[in-house]
Every structure is written in C-alpha cells, then in structure tokens.
Image (cartoon, one colour):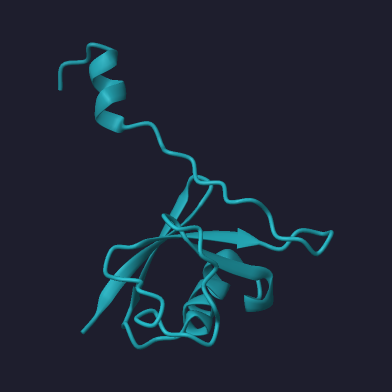
Length: 103
C-alpha cells in the first residue's frame, strides 16, 4: 500500500510517495536529487518526537505513518547537523482576507 510523508526543511515541503516497507536510507536516496545533497549529509527527524530516524530501519519499524511530517536537516561545514528549522508559511487566505480583498 502506498503512502506519502511530508519532508520539511525551512519553508520547503517535499511530498514523498513511499511504502511502509521502505527504509529511511531509501527515502534519503529519493531526497538526494531534490535537495542536491548526498544521503550522508542528510538527517531525518520525526517532527513530533524529535526522534532521529535510522537509515537501516523501515518507515513501519519507526512508526512513520501516512501523512507524517518529517524534518530534514543537512550537515554543515563543521561536520555537525543544522538545527531543525521548519517555518510555518503565511496562510494565503488569511493574508487575502486581512487586505479586505473581495475575491
């Protein structure tokens, strides 16, 4: 059964189509082309629990379900990983309504 996860970094969200039996390493390989970073420079973190997802385990092993939000952090020049940074975008409709626009 296919599912998807939302991988977020800063203001960007990647929707990754996957299966519960796929490993975290496989998800990182899918992200490699999108973020132009090798898998060794990526870290995936379960958003709610802040648990670092292990490459060798499957999504199901780590209780990652359909529509789960996963944070992506990348390795910095000093060989440490950046902090989780997920910014909530401004809602289009709230911004429009605040301007008094009549759509």
